[in-house]
Length: 511
Image 1: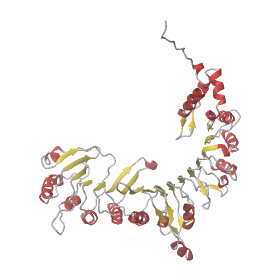
Image 2 (image 1 turned 90 degrees about the horizontal axis):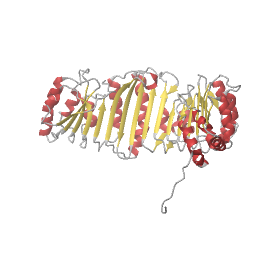
Image 3 (image 1 turned 90 degrees about the vertical axis):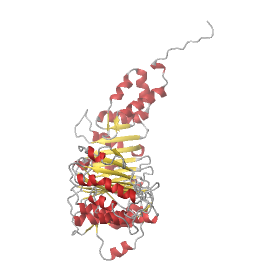
Image 4 (image 1 turned 60 degrees about the vertical axis):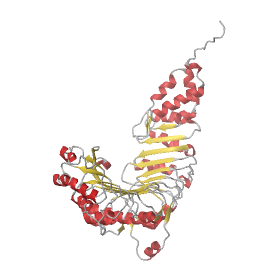
């Protein structure tokens, strides 16, 4: 017959080597757990299906370039097969001897190929990590993009100024936990993400500022320091110092255990006064020890000035303002109380997240929220979210009452909110006069937010505002998990406002 053709059946032996290589590389990548730094070797069995596959795998150096050291003999073999391919090294210390060789010995061999290493992760006791660090002193790392090192004991590993010969031009991602560094180093000048584990030994603020000035590309900084408070002439020099421009920084996380203001130490957040921010910024502070009002407020408030000054300088007109307070028993392995303050618009945002190991007093939340609200421009503010924070009527009116653009508010329904919504200005107009949408939180175990008298009085409040030309058109009730909103609460609002029951909130904790 003519016009027909047959297709020859293709077997796995007919696959081009480059296709086989791609399959092997993909399978090997699937066997790597980046979080733990462990690499299952199960994929190697596939390369033993036949002689051809084994030969193709052996000839592909890239296939063997991702090495972890849980199987030292295989790590040694893979190091040889990788030849001159860029290496990804993942070392987690094991003291056991396997097949006559330890992972530490193979890692020492790998470090002799430092110019080929692209990514490196090391998790080891201090004495082992020290030896590795010494091996890397004075030698450049031209291909290194990522460096994560963690010492597993209390003693710090000192990293000298000649580490990597201060030459790692591609280095972008660095995490050094349990390590102390020379703050004069230029090694990190191209780094975009930097994590420095909490350093207990106090350092001078000026040294920290010098270090930050050598990080022009930094976008994310996670660190924890305590600072010597400058004395005498040092204070004058520090006050006259020009601020360090942080052109690309968008996230900063500070961890501190500073608690005693009588010590000759400055607040860990003090150095922020000498920073100038350009990008929208998210700052997180973890206060990891028991504190009191005298230490909490100065530390938290010291964060506001430089960041809010940055916001004011850029003339940000925030449309959304948020204050949330909640508890989480999972963060940092213990119960942590979280206070978050945020402001944003279409093009910019500023937010602060504070983590505390003890529950905050209502007065502390109110003071910090008020301080933050005072520092931002809110002329066009349209949305206010107050999850778990109760501001008294005076503060509500002072910070939010005269905002003519406010359209939406999220808050527990309590006496304070009820009072300010029922209030009028000097011209007889309602406060929050553009307010049209409310999200009200309900917790049946909290007397204030579940008070039937307040909920039963809500219809009269809505009628009052409608008569004043400021009608609220939509209400969503958000019950805390485990709470059930009484049906009669919603029934009383029917015909007055659009009412709906929203999702349950799991983390809400009223103060």
